[in-house]
Image (tube, rainbow, N blue to C red; front, side, top):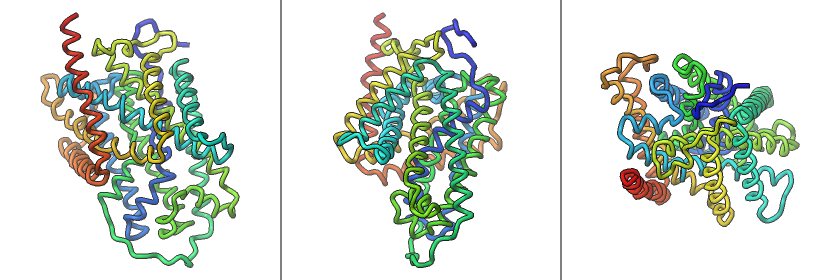
Length: 440
């Protein structure tokens, strides 16, 4: 067993473990909910599948850009570190604030609530069953991570392996089953590329979390590009397989009108006896997503506390468990607060999606743009990895980010303003932190 007496992260993640974290974040709850919305904005089955292929290719473009950043500037702070180095501590602070209060904690709560919904199908705990399951999930996974990175990493690998195996079985079984019935007439639908890609890329979302493991990945300069590309290649194949099965078994029209496509797929294959099976699959998926998001989210909070004395309590790395324990506790408290808030409203899930999307794409754009700033630095020629076809690759990805930022603001309406408002609340804390630092 490796001992850590340095107060810094140990490189304990091999390629398989890191790939499992990324796949565990991405291949989660979205594949059981969002394909319906993509189908509603697709005019044909071929077009529907082309959106999923495009989503994988776009994500790989972004991963190539992120690989250069992570290989040449490895740090547990990930995007926070890149933004701080490129644009200054103010932008880095706002990014980390947004992750801590909105993006990561909201994503954890979202996954926990969906787990609660499906767990209630199996065993109902009463009027607040979903919230009870969600709260227990957040507390349980936080405790596992507090015990140490190694136990949470091992659990992530096991959970991700089970999910991928079950999805592959469902996909192949679906393709070998009887095709969709022709009795359901297909109604004409217009194509909305922007709207469809919002949901597709939201389903692919989370691969960028791999850069937060750059300080803990063995031989990071050599392996980070392999980890990101292999993870995204695996995810793209899985998504194409599962969505092909959706089309084959359900048909495009039924896919457009089903709110629980996973249940519909399994019930069609098993003759109506697969509700519990898909519930267990979604529970595993949500559990994997929540755990992986807890792993990476706490590391941003750790980097924030490490660099800003006002939050120094969360900037301590616990040697005995090789984990940012205080950052995990704070993250857990905020997430439990969101769970409690969500228990009082039926629109918690949609509201969280609404106000996180614009903030997410804004910082995605800025992080990719930081690549140009690093390339202009005096030591920029001493690179361990370079993005292929520079500057074309990052320019294309920045254009995509800008388009999705625009689309997410238009699509979400007031929810976008709410997310931006929460983000801007971090500004007073930053200025107070600067004064606090100067007065010490």
